[in-house]
Amino acid sequence: MSPTLAGILFIASLLLALALCHRPLGDYMYRVYTGTKHSRVERVIYRLIGVRPGSEQRWGVYARSVLAFSLVSILFLYGLQRLQNHLFLSLGMEPVEPALAWNTAVSFVTNTNWQAYSGESTMGHVVQTAGLAVQNFVSAAVGMAVAIALVRGFARTKSDTLGNFWTDLVRGTIRILLPIAFVAALALVAGGTIQTFAGHSTWTTLTGGEQTFTPAAAASQEAIKDLGTNGGGIFNVNSAHPFENPTSWTNWLTIFLLLVISFSLPRAFGRMVGDNRQGYAIVAVMASIFMISVTLTNWAEMSAGGTVPQAVGTAMEGREARFGVSNSAMFASSTTLTSTGSVDSSHDSYTALGGGMLIFNMLLGEIAPGGVGAGLYGMLILAVITVFAAGLMVGRTPEYLGKKIGAREIKLASLSFLITPALVLVGTAVAMATATGRAAMLNSGPHGLSEILYAYTSTSNNNGSAFAGVSVNTPFHNTTLGLCMALGRFLPIVLALALAGSLAQQASVPAGVGTLPTHRPQFVGMVVGVTIILVALAFLPALALGPLAEGIR
Image 1 (cartoon, rainbow, N blue to C red):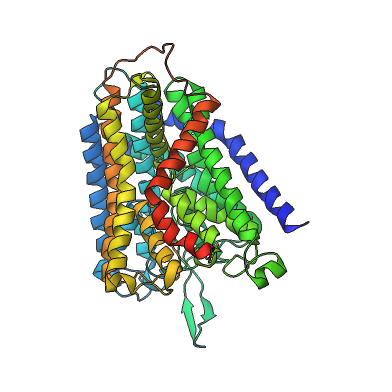
Image 2: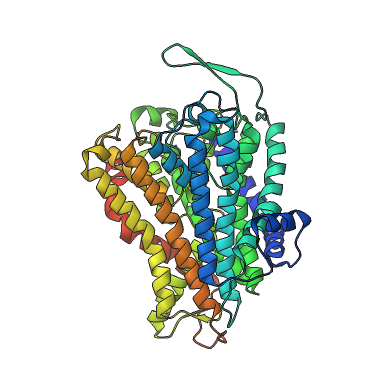
């Protein structure tokens, strides 16, 4: 079988599995978030945290709950890292340096899991499991809760509440993430992923010396980090390590876990607004952008320039040799189109245009399908902007799902979209304008700029992957990248909840002759076009100076 045919079959089987899961998983998530009964475990948790699960919250209270929970999580995770030498199972690890501890705490709480360190030589077992792994769950559950709150804003009329954040958080964790992660961990163990704290492994360093470490429970960590769309792993090489990703089919399963919840949430959205066609339209937008990215990234990698790559048919440097170029490119596209950061190959070694596509994936706002929850609310905000633009063209007050998109709504949606471009461009400019920022580059010229641009794109969009050629474990980058992660996560969340509150207070507007149908292929194409155009307008100069300039040299 040719590598091209094998890659096509790999992608086709993955898309088929996602399509088969879309309806049942989406319907299940709909029942989770709309049900009124609480399990015994959930009732115990509510009593412990002092929450009345049946009480409803206004958007401001919902937003303050998200921020309060996240702040406490950052402080707790920061403390764990700073005190890890006093914890049992610390493996003799020293306390994490303050700037790095801040960066890591913010990274995992914001569902980014950017790692400026080598996991196996920096974090002990307690920090990895009680700190980082817990955040892999709850930070993803926060994203789903915010998405569901925004959907309630569309679904409700003349209401000033959006549900209860604490109920949504607990249900998303207990009923969705934990059960799927448990099953996925068993599958990964069957595929050869380790699941033990016992035993030691030894490897030879580049200097010829040997180092010994105790492997953590990689199977459960791999299932959690992929299902929660997080890139943080035990090992520095992440999903390229055979302890985490030993076989071709575990690689397939890993990509499936990255995508399945985000591609299924639009079904829950359609059920909640009472029109399944709306959910199909949103998932069609996601799938269209996804397939464009996968196709272009594979093309860029399979048609690599240069004498040696052309002679052998492709470039293998930095690719996962066990899985091939196409499967590596598929993983790379999937991880940069979600807020994941998990990698099975070195993105820094991709071709200039292939690496440029990975940057562009993140610049889209990671909405195809995006992070768990974050992808859906990001896509709905782009749908609101599209409807508003269409309304301007025909001279009507735009409507979406029976709600008028007025001045307040479009301001909130526009600000939410503009936050990450501002963070990416300002962060990159500051880093390139200072000697301290430029010192992180291990390459000069356009590729060096691409490394910095990738770093600030990844953190501002809460992705977590990196061009490994950049060395960012410095006080300057740990601080600035941490700020980008925090602002890139929480400002859009607050604005999305404010938009949800504004929509929920409106009465439903009956569809008229001039109402734009938002369930047809025409609307799908419009959202795809508006998304790509907006991103191109914001970032084309930066891309022209980085990956595009490198690609045409």
